[in-house]
Length: 269
Image (tube, rainbow, N blue to C red):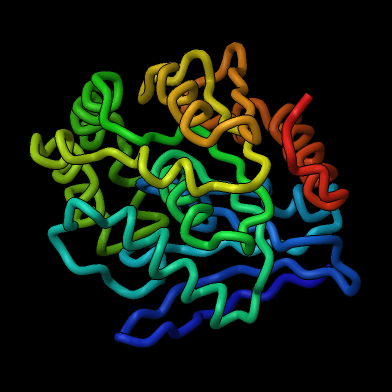
């Protein structure tokens, strides 16, 4: 198993930082990880590597525009920034790396982007796993962000994020909370139209104690995708299931990849 860190140019001045974990003989599609609103490659910790070790699949982790060491993003963010990431920049990245079939694993904002990407990629998306994804802005999201703003300076979060985002930390944090607390964005956010175009096995995961999302986020997504989607609510789990319950999430990913690789994609039992 080989790990390669690489900056990939996508044109238009966009360069994304990537980490690829590859096997001499990989099994099935590449598993692509899409990070949260304030995440980067490092904040996934060893979880992607554990997926690669357990499943034998190749793995791609990357940092979106404006995050980590990727190139800057235009600010302020437009209301459709998640759709741009899912239908424009992720497909460009896959094309640049000559990656065809993928299983998408997205957390929080990355989960929402993964939903859009799964629809935009069509048959290239062989499987989908979201954790704490949103298709609309709910009251828990708004209150959770407002609480995070208070904690940013009071609880040392700023210093934590600076270790990962450096000088762009304040701009990134401001870009995140500004767009989500914009009433126009809250009213316009609706990804339901993308869901019916998703045609692959999907696990829609959320912690029962997630402070950033109501349970209806999961049930709405599953209903929108149809019978190939399965809801998963994890007990004693908050907003980051892969860090709080890694063994359970690893087992779920493993089982989904078995379904993908055996082409049993019609529905879950």
